[in-house]
Image 1: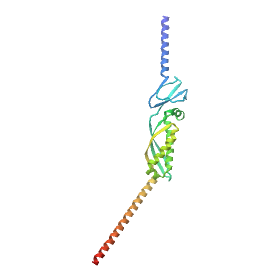
Image 2 (image 1 turned 180 degrees about the horizontal axis):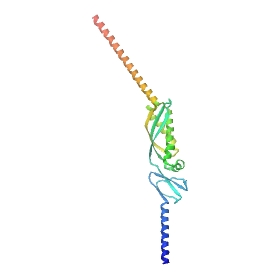
Image 3 (image 1 turned 180 degrees about the vertical axis):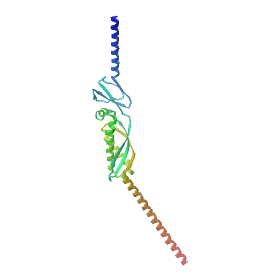
Image 4 (image 1 turned 120 degrees about the vertical axis):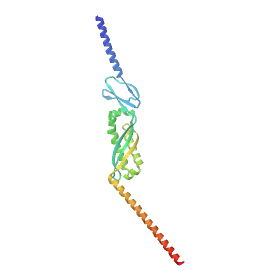
Length: 226
């Protein structure tokens, strides 16, 4: 009887040990899927070397892995600046970017989550890059030469984000607006130009009419001589 009880106890202990071994084994590995990169932290300290696509060992119970999406991300970010002629210019940019998988450990240590990267790095650098691009031209040039404005913005943003492990793939200007004062000035300028063009047209028409009248008078004079 005692042997049976002892055997049962041994079986139970063996079952518990086996369960713990299985649990430890399952927690000793992590799978990084395509489009992801991981950062291994042991006892709260991020370890050097990003975990790329594949299966990786991690110390059970004392470690965890932060997974980062390294596929293309898209965020719309507003920006505002003054132009060279001190006019207010407001824009909204669509930023297509991805995190450099090799730099995720440094990103984990300095910025943390993707949300932090967007709010603390990408959004402020977008604002600063727009200031650089806008300050090089007047508001009229910014509107009529939008491609040049975008090129300056792209170059400034790419250089600024590269040092943070963020790769800018593409940007687009969703919206570009100017102050109501400038809009009124543009409208008044257009009206003035239309009036000027109208005045030139009226003057030319009057000149043609005067020339025609002179020709008619000459014709009558010559007819009377005959």
